[in-house]
Image (cartoon, rainbow, N blue to C red; front, side, top):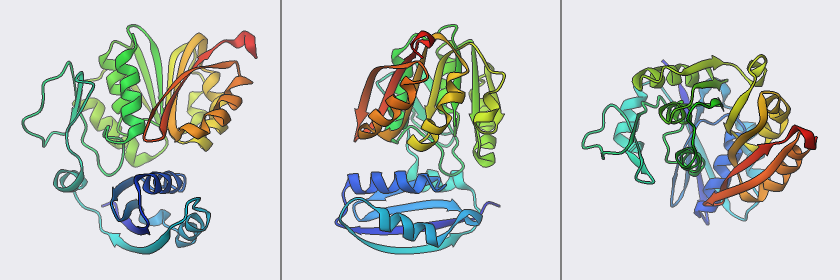
Amino acid sequence: MNDYVELRLSLSPCTETHTDILAAMLADEGYESFVPDHEGLTAYIRKEDFDAAKVDGIIAAFPMETTFGVSHTVVEGRDWNAEWEKNYFKPIVVDDMCVIHSTFHKDIPQCTYDIVIDPKMAFGTGHHSTTSLMLRRLLSMNLEGLKVVDMGTGTGILAILASMRGAAQVDAIEIDEFAYTNAIENVSLNNAHRIRLHHGDAATLAGIRDIDLFIANINRNIITADLPAYTDTLSPGATMLLSGFYEEDIPVVVEAARILGLEYADHTVDNRWTSLRLTYNPLKQ
């Protein structure tokens, strides 16, 4: 089965801001799931991807004053659904319109949109601020008949909601093979037949065109590097929703987008994480 390294980082002092920043830095190095608490952060990465030197580098580059305690153990492959059921994943309701739960949950609240997610390890369940921000965006928009891309789909949760809300076609792309397999399972659980899943990176976008709505909840560095490939898929007037970074990163992303004909529309914020909305006007390039 899939073996992971469980990395424990104890912080003193420790605040939610400390653990959010640390999780973002670890995500850039391939860590897949994070369990914060009042004393620090527990993070998980595939055993073959673990590099202690990179952990030391993150600690050295950490931008806030704190003292670190570090340890790690190998976690042998197991039934990750059972682990989430026992420890982490609880049902979540977004804006009283959408409930996200797993197959093992009972007494599920009734909502307009009912999404079933069986996460294998770490990929969006709606609890993290970036995912919930994007879910709220999709719930507030008219998606009827739109062609959508969900870049870095993870569990497939955003693609599934877009399909439920009437998108005509959703291309959902995931680079991680394990996450891609999980997304296939979740799409099937929700009978989301209008979703086409692709295993790959931004190169997978070649040939995908005339997109009305492009979603990417990844991180700032990947987004800014891949924005030209994202933009090549868009129809004039299309909307791009970006998340996975902090509010203070917005100027960097907006500047990278501006030269491609993407204009700032607005942004929302939750716990310093942001969701940025851009509109595409190719005449402004």
